[in-house]
Image (cartoon, rainbow, N blue to C red; front, side, top):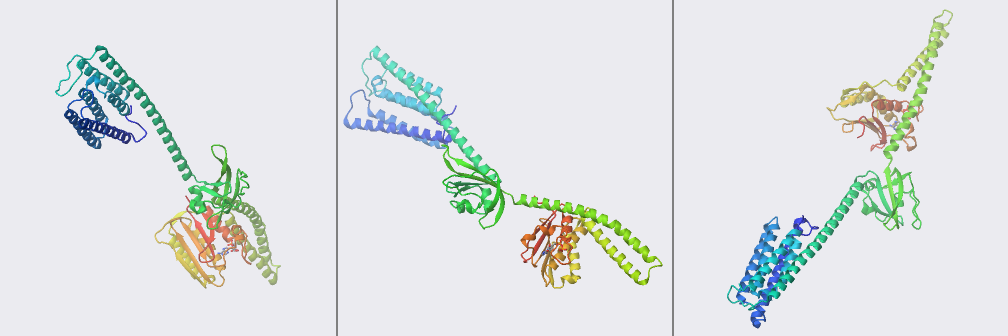
Length: 545
Ligand code: ADP
């Protein structure tokens, strides 16, 4: 069973209650002292008041006891024993007061009621009954002793000569009944008070828990949440929304939501159009847009009154990117499949043509002129055959033979190749690769991929420029970037398609081959904009977490 009123921190609440009780006692003592002083100044009041010295010493002892209790309260950790001592002391103190102020004629038995009430507040229900019983015994004994003439014992105390039996009985009956009635009433009231305090505390705890749960969910959910009011102004956002928008709630608050959600219809006269599932764009604080999926629902207050609109949205950038990659891979697979079939079909007749022409040229009937023409046919057929072999290699790439190697050494080799190639004459190449790093992959294939990217970069800078070739170990990325004319937005998705070229003599197979090599390594190939001014190709070999 708990002691004291719960609701506050258990110990702290009890300590405060106890302090209040001690303060009340000091107040009662002071009133008694004041009364006694008055009584001395004005002369003895009617009744049986003793020599004031008795009262003084009793009150002084009680002050001392209250002081000791207050000190003990500061040091003690458990108070129950202290409270029991206080209550016992108070019962004895009141009995002494009654004794000094005329026993049955004393006006102070009501003080017992205060002690019983205090016990109800500070102790258990059982203790209250014990205190009431103790008060009844003490009061009854005092009246009995007085009735049988054993009192007063001390000098300077006057009692009535004789107490009529019915009066003694009546006084004991009335007071004992009052003590028990008070004990039961107080215990029941305090019990109820405690119960409602426990219930209130529980409700408060539940509320706090719920609040915490809500805050945790809102703070950790990956979807952005935005609440807008009936005028379409932002009222609240969660951390995910702040991150996507790149601004804080303070900066967003009361701004029209349409600024961030161009697709969201601004409500007219508080009528929102609900969206179950839609895609749109989100403009962040710096004006950048990103694709999002969103849905909306109404926010009503507990009375059902419309308060605003809740917009839930998710960033679809990565999903869109993945979608685009898959589409590209599909496209490549389909084109590659078809083209590989055709290349194969062309190769067979080509071999027959080449063989037949060779036979023809070897026949005696062929003249010198014919032999020259037939030799051209054989040479061009060989060239075509090689082109087809290259194409087949692209279309049916060899599985990468993965082994650990030093990317820095590979970039070094490429630097050597660049140095000896006239296409790079007016180009300054910068190579950034930390030594000692090891990468797992097919070095020959990756070098081929980088070479294709380097050639493209050189062709994008016909009058020279800057070129950077780098390896970043944190993301296992190989980077080729240049200061050339870059890739127009409209071409960004197409340039990876086989046979797509913007050059007069291009084959459109360079980037498609790079793409095939990188995907065979389980990596990704991305196009960005280089700080040098041109295109930036990034081969990421480590899948992003
Ligand atoms: P090709 O080089 O034969 O045209 P690619 O597949 O290598 O074929 O390149 C496809 C297209 O991508 C090029 O025609 C060009 O328009 C563009 N491209 C590739 N690399 C770059 C670059 N570094 N800068 C600008 N455009 C580029």
